[in-house]
Length: 495
Image (cartoon, rainbow, N blue to C red; front, side, top):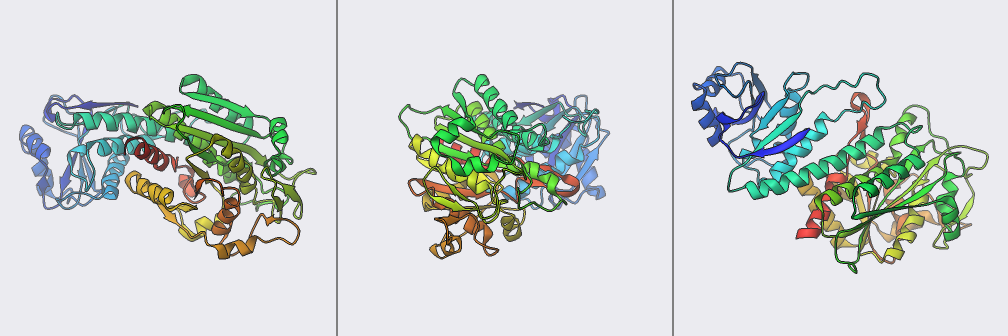
């Protein structure tokens, strides 16, 4: 989709459909009043007729408009005539784009940037319009013979004012970059495991490096990882015919000697559970166990497009976890890159084995902070549902910064405790650590395990098991937490 800005009067804009907000009690915004006058009081007539009450998220499509430039008007309810909350603004945006599904509408002008949002400026509103529209029209058609989608929209024009044009241009640039990062993340995650293998994921990363001069990409093979002593990571791939890869994306946008922000994304392209085999129902969704890795690629793409003045390292350990005669067995003891031994009590707790060696590997970059993200535990879905991602970490300032970014990005987080008492559950009679801590507090004990490999830097862990994809009729990747991470990076770059 093509995105652009326009500062001209609404009644002069050429489009198939104009999206216009209305408030409750038949109240119009300034721009709606102006358009109402130029369309023979059409909008007031529709409101007076009761076709739309103005409640947030209500819509009505007007197909006959007395205008030479505007073919249709979509009225969208904004609620009470006061600044919207960020969530209600996005709700109105989502209702708008959903109302245009399965129409012939190609060119859309969105005037919802005209309404006030509490605490947010024109840059934020423009960015959200792009993100919500892009996210909603995304459909995975790669593996279908019929490539038709539910939307025909080719161009979205976002209104602005001369006074806010600079902010709107900033929001447009950021929104397009983040939206493209989200789309890449969703595309990679939605691909089936027979296509999106560890090697395929590495190829996609290398392709990004060829596209952006600020992005240097390299890939460690299993022989390289063996020399580094990555016994935990390599143990996971032993049951698969697909060789493991450790992808490094090095984005250099800041000063040469500035410590980098390191992002680590779990990249299990398919997780059968290994010898501790998962149940068959829903196992197809385990292609989404690489959403953390896909999100790192998407976030680095967004950072490169936004040309952020930061140094960022993306690390993606990628493998499959399959049952095989050479696969990990319950009771096996592994030696990690850090030299710590790990008793494998459950081979389905493999993500932390990939991450622990990658956390140790991250030390060589002398990081300012390290953030790992992983579809790590079903326990996180039980605890928090599909609304927030779980957050744990060893540094309050870093965790607080991520929570602040999550609020701005509308990509929610909820922090869980990382208390010493939980470490007791990881004790092993035979090794330094067990890889699981029992049925209680599974999300927390998984993070406790990782904390043993993050002692030398400021670290945060995002458990995205409940937020990285949707199940059911709307099954598909969400692209989270690319918006959160992008906002965190924007804040680091410009605050």
